[in-house]
Length: 244
Length: 245
Image (tube, rainbow over all chains, first blue to last red; front, top):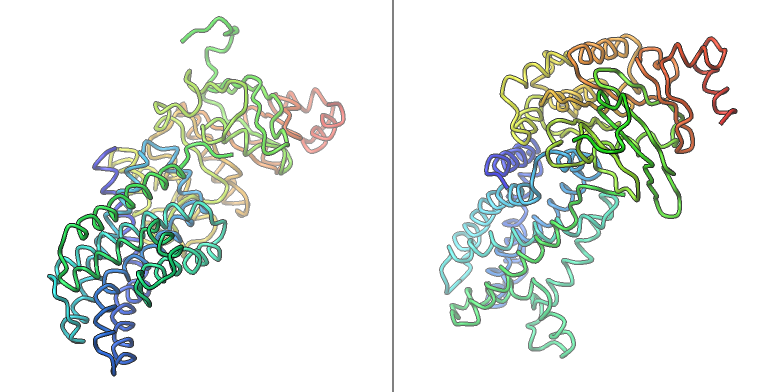
């Protein structure tokens, strides 16, 4: 692994994103806009809104970075740039960490804007510190990136890659307790959700929102970290120097 | 480096392939191919599409999964990490980032390759893209995109340059210019392997390798091929050889 190649990759990915102004605008505008919409939907039940608002601030980057990474990686595979890089003196980690750095920077801006709107304008109440919500949002973005990178290996077209969002992301959001808390779900679904990365990301954010800082929170954060490493290892395994 | 099996004359071989076996599913794409490419020459790899040209080239640069045989490039097994700066490969579809400018593409790949900064300018001049350096690749013509991809391959001044159908879709003037570039590179000592399915282009090559159905049906200079087949154009020569094989 080389710092030169890693940073060059991060700069290159950032330059590609910068050139696509409309995508950047969507990344930064859609999450606060959706939160504002929810705020009005839950106008009569502010406590229900509070329960999901802070976790959503931290989950938007996960979903969006998942989508962007799976499409970006798919493009690298289909246009041959990935094969070209694999024939060059570039370590797989250079590519993974380079992508991670660029997307973490974007996620930081996105989470800051979304948190600013949520906690500043919409009056979302969080008992825990706002900066911790933003930090978790960045960690979630890296998790989304790692998952997208791994799953992109199983898509042959951009149509398929986009379908992975309802196929893999939506069920996890539902099972993590977004609409109904996990302890009110049937037992088998609870067990299933124990095995899904979103569950821990969501739980950590919920605990922060309720200022329920205990040992469980650190376990949840640890689980998010573990999932990032696992997804990156699986993602690295899909980057092959030789292909059939 | 010398091995027991080395035959006389292999000393100036840049590529040595012995019994290369590549399968895709049940199909044997290359059922035992042997080939030798000499240093400093432009070797043309000819054959209809689907004859295995791309698979053979991919095996030489070490990105193809192979099932048997030996591929030696510059005295090392193909795909060895030491070869990653000494061998360059240009795929048929331009493998550059369409959303970056020509210069941004070259700067990125130059960092990955640790190529000296001066090489970027030289590569741009060689492929004649000086006026397009600040344009986004996606807005360039097909020919300009291929030349951007070629420029990336020139960044390390490789000893072996493998080009897959580099002239497809180019107008005759550009095609002529590109062949002149290839010969200029060979005159500097670079070895080039260029695939094409256009027989006319074969006349530009120093050596020719003709492929059909994953097999090599002939290896010779253009003149020798014509003499051997008693024909006066390469299209005819190919037909005669295909019938004999």
